[in-house]
Image 1 (cartoon, one colour):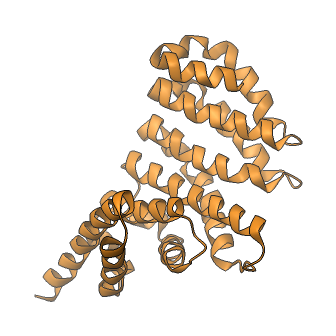
Image 2 (cartoon, helix red, strand yellow; image 1 turned 90 degrees about the vertical axis):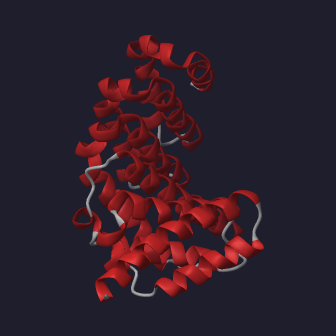
Length: 252
């Protein structure tokens, strides 16, 4: 499977002609939950294929989504397979665009459950495996949501209002957690901006009762961090400020 993944990246748009034969191998890998390494590799291949053939993956998306549902619902699945599957939803959303809309109900349920689980879980400071797993799970949640909000323009605040506060709280908690990796922080700050851009500053205003809190948080990253984190924080702050402007205009 991994060899085919390399091939997909190499030939990119031409790879779709191999898909009718290759999809069966991917299916075997994803559903082999007793072998988490094979399952994880197969899921990563789906992400590579999504990048390679773009929107033409729509011919196989129903089957792919169904395949990825199975490990998530399997009672005894190794938890390590969950982060790459959640991330892959973001890859598929970017590839499919509006065609991903029909999967939103299920995907939002999976992501909102994962968001709440991470937010409500306390991890011991000496539980290094737990810290690593929840960092990967948190990053995968952020990446998946970002892909969806970037690609599926039909999503409105009303569609996500039930779990949007949990998303924002998880971003805030992650930024305050010294155990979170740079990749988690970057993904979280990126999602913060993507939420506002995707859903609109005005509809997002009720979810930002304390704009100054977010401004202080982002200013801290802008002043102390370097390179990619600083750039993402600057961009996210611009989006947060646009929500603040909506608040000021309403008060005039």
